[in-house]
Image (cartoon, rainbow, N blue to C red; front, side, top):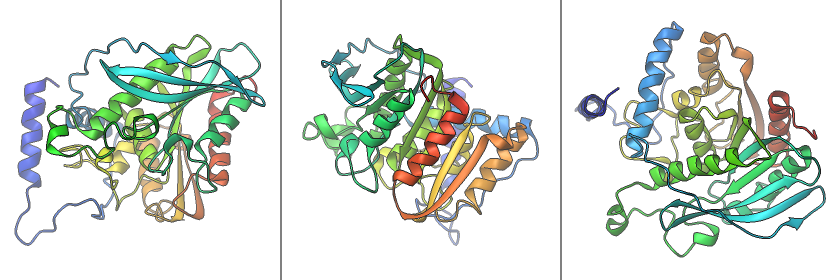
Length: 336
């Protein structure tokens, strides 16, 4: 779709979505009934619109020209079955994304790879608790034979204090992009870096993350076919669309919902982890069947799965174990 017609379509969406007296107002906690599609052609038309809609609402249509990442990489530290390095990438001129690169200690590759987004944990990509251990899952993946790039959301870890994660003040709005647009761009540039590593099999890249990291997972999977397998954890919900500005760009939720955005992964393998202790409580009965019905249109119903647990909002050891098995099923790690 050309840009002028796309903008016109969005303007019409805004008009149609405007509140009408006596009708409920759409909001982040609005309960949405899953849409149904009777044919693959009908879904593909909707899917094309959704992908353009995501890009426009995040300020990424047309996609900006990527600039050199100029990676800055620390010396290698060796662990038990893995190596680790700190990385800084210049995703915009003068604007840096920080992360940690984990590799298997043995073997030459090419290895499958995992892009790891952390979510709104207090310590970002360094969170190491029973509810969520971002280094723990990266180390486990590396020991299984994956290269892992774990990267920080804006305003976390090394960039904390330079600017806030929720940069929604007027002076930050002058930058010309939203927090979500910046974060989605950073995720895409992190994927550029990971997929270009010589030891990585670029056709065997997965992505996972929980909470806000789950949002980044299913959004990047929606717009970038290089993500071959995805596991968004505790995020895809019919009644909660994400509570942070980094999950809600302008216009995104006008006629677009997380269930359909998550379904844009089809027919690539998708693991939906849900739990009884947060907004994914209804996933086995609502969100999973809705997304599986779209996979069925592709003849790929077995390529989407749901594991439902009984914890608070998390990415804990049991959740991680389910994702390890799912990725191994589709990516066959060299050292698995």
